[in-house]
Length: 370
Image: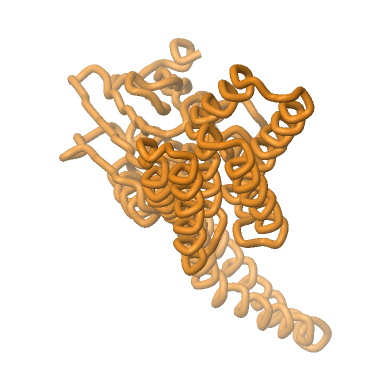
């Protein structure tokens, strides 16, 4: 299902509705029997509704389907019938036929349909002695060119959006695989050793209790050693430095097709402050990849000896509900606040979203932090 609103999908059709002025004016001002006016008005209404529906379906991903082609046939049939029946003031309806054909038909069918619509428009004008309005057939062709270009741009943008999402998913999957490999390398040997020695101790428990106790001591030592290694690995993974987080952010965002501007250098910061700012960079990067739809991200980092200020700004959709379940910002604000810092987020000065962390560089007591 297309997530874009319906008005977006028919927006490309709305500018051409200006040409409705001429048939409407002719319907009101020209003296005709009431029955003719009612039938022509009803035909114009049906024509307009079906024309808008063709655009809604075509730009909603349903181009070239049977339902769209059937509606396009209705638009073409009504447009030609009303133009031939009602005269030159209604010849502009063939412009709509050209626009709908360019939006909904495959390329090999577009230009025969558009040329046919332009030819019918020119024939109506010439046969009624309105040769001065031959700009209308030209508009049929120009409209088709404009809509084909628009259709191409919409298609390319959709492909780029899909590629960006795929790259973001691949970046997350790659990081998960890396961490899984690290844990496997750390635990594979230790757990195999523990399993073998536990099995040996079980067999020796009855025949050689002293040897069994020695084996179990080895099991305990191996388990403690494995636990320490896992703690070191998790600590190294969680307590990422700001410089490391910026490098990872560059790789992840660039891989997702997002332009990145990072600080020229990372100043030397106290360990806890460096780790907290690294977390801010990681959380901001994750939110940009998942939610923002941004095309560019700018990260600035300054320090004046008293405090460090980190800002991550993007040009995406702007603020959302940061307190929604699953958001990492409340926990991140607690982490920053524990060190006496302040984390704020909201609309950027030039749109998009801006996350800003201000961290004191001097030690802060627990009471002051609270």
